[in-house]
Amino acid sequence: MASKYKPFTPSDVIASLLTFLPDEFNNDPKKIHSTIERLQRQKKYKHLLEDFEFLNYDPYPYSPLLGRILNRLQEARLLSSLNPEYEKYVLKKESREAIKKNILKKKLSDQAENLQQMASELKMALK
Amino acid sequence: MASKSLTDDVEEFVKTLITWHTSQKVAEKKVIHDPILGTNVFEPHEIALIDLPFCQRLRRISQTDVASLIYPSTNHNRLEHSLGVATIAGRLLDSLRQRLWPNQMDILSPPAMIEVRAAAILHDIGQGPFSHLTDYIMKQLPEVIQYRKKNPNKFSEDKPHEMLSYLIVKSPIFQDYVKHEIISKYGLPEINMDRVAEMIIAAGQKDPLNAWQGNIINGPFDADKLDYLQRDAYFSGLRIGIDLDRLLHSVWLDWESSPRRLKVMPSGAVTLEQILFGKVLLYNTMYHHQKVLAAECAVHGVFEILKDHKEYKINGRRMNRAIDYLYVSEDDILSLDNKPEELKDYVERFLGRYLPKRALVISADTVNNPDTSPGYFEFKSLAENPKGLRDLRLKLVSALNNKYPNHQIWIALPRTPTFSDEADRAKIQEPGGTEKSLRDIFHIDEWLTAYWSNKWKGYVFCPPGEAIRKEVAKKASELFHDEYNFSLNPKAFEQAKIR
Image (cartoon, rainbow over all chains, first blue to last red; front, side):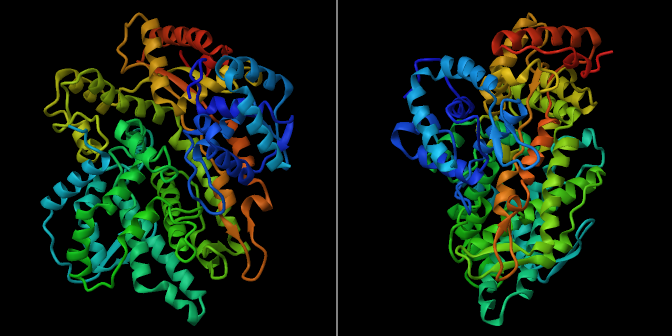
């Protein structure tokens, strides 16, 4: 199902999804990749996640694209990882608001409910 | 009439190359010398595989595309690399043998050994000219996208060459040839070429009994990485090292785990760290060197000209299907023969190293307030969206009043490397001890990502000339602001070193 707003990309989906997570959340690639892969298999989220290829890696399904998006969010300074442990991701309030205003509202407003539900599943997994 | 599928194209390609080939029986083992790995022995059936035109064409594919224009000694090719991968795969098998109990030796049966080395020899036969440079083009082609969508979660979306290598090995004509001309002629035991194909794309990693074979070819510390990191560093002259012997002394096969997988004893963990450090340093110093990126843009210009002139061809091919890239060599693309004047001029200038120059440098350091500018993130994400990036580039050409053709104006957004799958997938454990990953010991992947975040740079390139570069810089900066709502600070211009 296409959004009635501007076309969105996989990067837009992940950035928008993160805005529904707490300011700090666990940086656990196994749980992040496994949860997004599980969400992709649910019909109601498929259209948001269909571009991700989750390779059947051991020990968890791994999407190179998702890995690159998370790294790119850090390169772009929207997301950071706390030094020196690097165990938590931090999404600052001002970055969150900027993503909401410029990406979520412009491209994925009609998908906000879906994204919120996806984020709550991810939040549970990352507890 | 329905359009041809990717598998039809591959089948025709295999048939064509097999028809060209005259099979000659290899009488004995051969010794092949290598500057990095020393003197290595290849079995007669392996030489027969290497002699196939699928492998021989790899001699004419540069391992590091056009990096030799910047690192002049970087002239090694994909065949050298494939032989290196086979050698390292063989050494990994030998190391495993030393650590197995007699009752476990069956796992290293002759077919298993032959399959692993065959997968190493064949793993890159789907590479196009200039290696990853044409991967970028091939991944956008409809038949590639269609095949990937029909086979979800099997192929990495940014490595179509793996898909092509897999399809060649899976092809009935190829398998028939191997059966009659290699297995039977050399008296080999029955080998499973489907398993060879699966190793190439890292499928079967959850196969309880055979996953370890795939680990050697496409895993967190596979023979591919262990070869290319050493080879690219050696030939470029960059002092980046990997202690391969240390790894070989500490790798073992965990018989009890399901799937059975390769692990490294804690004493070998340092080599795993070297792999990740080596990867980040090679990206930083060579693969994403600004001049290497500029040279890659210049080669893309050839394909851009072909896109604009439907009548132009290379070796009689339109270069609009993935398989076209397997029929032509780098020499064909850079030859001055049989080319229309426009293409010939362009290639001639490339051969004379007339490369694009920087007009703008775009990074977290040159963007104002990146942490509140998600437009900068959207812009960087064009790296995943070749069509969107091309559309933006054409807007820039238009903003410059079409004074310069679109094959002379470039926006280069290099691909972000990732480290987490290696850090998570490489398993460290003493036999009988507790399994850990590299990131369980230290979040090395995140540390490297943090390092990388400070190194990543994107560029706008244009023809040489101070006035042109200034003009392009100004227009590009305005365009990015209008389209993506981020602004650049003076460093974006200063770092482009326009004098």
